[in-house]
Length: 404
Image (tube, rainbow, N blue to C red):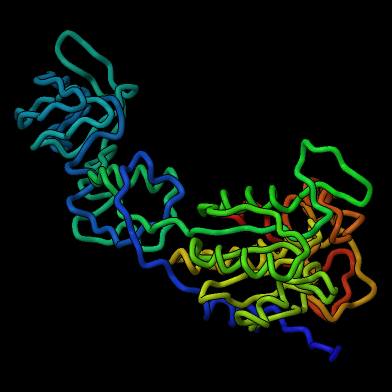
């Protein structure tokens, strides 16, 4: 077989993201059901938030110009939260509570801890200034400004912000429909006894969890036996039901690696073999117009390639604002003495060492060792053709960030 060169990670990602179809369909959802979904439109602020000046503390509202040190001010009103206040009477104060609307004529709120209540009114201890302890109208959001952009993933804080604007129903992108297939005659579902030569189907469950975290709907989830005809028929059937097909295994150079062969024969294979470690045999193409992402078969390689390659692709399809995880620079607590032609994503975690936080690597980085990912908290990146000495700065990506 003719040698195939390895595609650099940046070139592979440019190809994948350029081919990613963005979901066009949207749907309305109650705000209560919107967590984790992607906004399908911009949201402008319909009215000021807060809608009026309100008190930031429990205390007394007054006009700072009416204050004379040592002179008691009478209490003319009491303003609970939710009540519409009357204008403040000249030369008096109003008892006010956190969140209550500040009455017209008042320009400051004095905390109750600075006040002495006497039969003749209140005495204020210390000096006061105008505008203190008041949350101004529109302080959070001003009417007509852009609050949230299309493509924003809705977190609890976005739910709260939408609620503050009076939004009860949210326009979101339809979920990406994904079909996942594990390949191999050796695969057995958990709960079944293992015969000689068999292993449990790890990748199905890793992918189910990853896709749930990514906000996708899994439409098909099956195991493909090592048969060319069955593989072709199953992928073609999935193409009519899913926006994206993800396979694990079947994309290397073996005689039983039928996924790659089917794409070449009956679809399109536009990318194969990346300069990435683990995960070199990753493939990308399409069948009957539906994109197919062929991940390697080794469990740790499935996790790494999904996070590094699959997640940016899925975010692009979802119309997300932010495609890549920003990561952070961290000093290494491990060494690499033999440079590789592939970019390596090391299963790693942060640890405190002599007062400094460094990134430690799991001792066994084999692509078949999934327990390394349970020990790890993220991925550290060793660039191509690079050695690493302890203390060298590396890009580090927490798993939580890669999946957000």
